[in-house]
Length: 142
Image 1: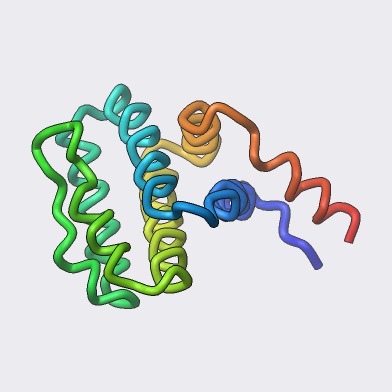
Image 2: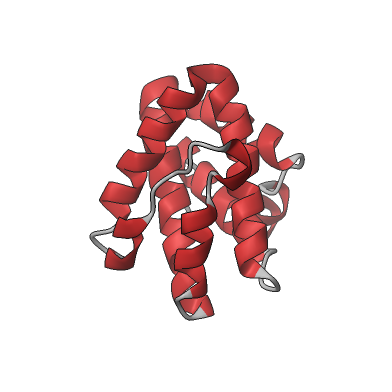
């Protein structure tokens, strides 16, 4: 039985968006984080975003210990430089799995703070599309 809960939809949005970035994964992943940061900073400020990101890294590093070295740069242009370097030191599969878990953890925290619907709206706004349409249609047809 398929789950049609809001958090399932949000996780599908994250997975679908990340599936599109197979080539040049590191650049696409960092671009997605920059887009999310822009949206979230507008809502909770830079300090709020940094705290949410740091908490997400802390929770994700239990599964991917190499993420422990990831800190945000105070310069917006280089905010995710250490994250990109961490991805480059891993296999593509490992980096994609870590980024997916990091995004899902981040959005789980966001949803618990500001609500599921606003979190989904921010993701859609950040990525400039509705990546949930395709998975939703596919899932309905299964």
